[in-house]
Image (cartoon, rainbow over all chains, first blue to last red):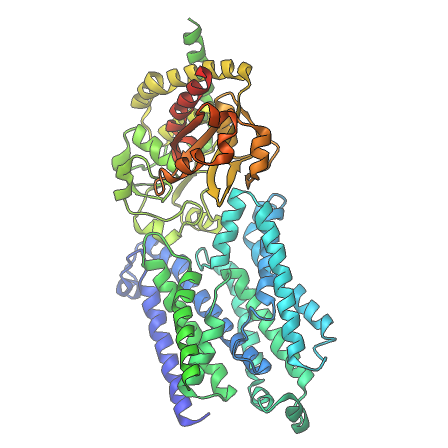
Length: 331
Length: 287
């Protein structure tokens, strides 16, 4: 990493820590955070802080980091600035899994399992998509990224048919759950649900950081990279599997949250440069940062009610994206 | 005499609510969060409105509710938001959610009560009784029930059984989606309302709220069309339905058989639903 990039990453880390503290201190429930440090809080205050707000902030930062990282890796791999976790169909696979469970399965699930069933079905959904991609592209080995992108688009629209059909046959309350789920939320996070997810995501993030050098080389073109000695098949495997895992787990816990995977890597590229050693790290921290800020807005702006966080990220993301397109056209 | 017997019968049925654990008296009912239109309506009916500290967005009646802090939509609540108004009791409609938020609230030992909904007149009476047990207002409650609700149910049931012999064919239109209406099929609150007034839902074979074709409306030829109104676009719905050429061809269109009322009054299954049903049942009975 260059010196400037190192500074950016460090600033991002400081900002992240700062906003983590801000985010834990503010919410619709007023909690004097200084009293917590001096252990002066009532039981209810403590419970709200430790059981409701804290897991939520942690989950938001982990999900933001994974979506942004996966976006950066996929954009690098496909050498396509429009790639994001939604593009290869992983998110919609997860969404289809959830829709199936909400609409068809809700009556057959014993109640003690119900907190785990949506995350589980989302992971199954994204796993099926990865398996399909793997099968269609003969172990990711088939030449040409376009081929894989097209396969992703086809899988996306097929999952869209499934979700559309399920929406059509769903009853009133199922439809509501489905709608709110697709807008994303970190509400209702619980330690027992998010701890396994955090562990899985952290391991996968460390795993995917290793590919940054190879992602730089593949920017020269697939043939060139192969000539230099990059194992393209293994690279594709690493990037896609790790993206699928972190996106599947994130989507399962927080629902569909748009635009973070797409805009954060672009933003970081514009700030600091394109080499992936920098880009991946910067995306992780800024993804987490933007997500906890969005979540903070979502739960305080119309308090005591709450806006779905997916609305906030898209509301910030879409104008930014338009501006980006405008700027690219000018240059 | 007959009236007195049915009154007695109705009141004995209510022992169910008293025995139900979920309806037992709350330890502290001074700060209530009301999640659900009918729950709020009942709290106002029981003159407990001063204890409500926040309500959800489906609570639209009476109008004063709008001045209370809003906790959002009843099926998509936020635990911290609810706790921020420091409630001692949360009373919710049976579609209150999402489940993980309800779990969180239960785990924090907040008194959360989900009021069971059975979509008929006795079900509404049970709701009222259950809530009055929880908030402990037995005396006033008895007066309200015996003075207004029970007599209304009794006359509703009388007209209902007369209507059942008439066999009038009815449809309920939730909204217009372009030119095709979204109607109440089987297993909807709209269908329950049609049953309450003793009419026959022409779309009982359809499951849930669905869009239906214009042709099928002419084919089924409803005698009456029930239109729940929404606050936002109050008259647009009705006028667009009345001026619609398709509806003009039906019996309802020819005889001006349009019945409209506030949406939550028809579909909310709170106290107002009984009076709304009574009104609708009378209209059907007269024509």
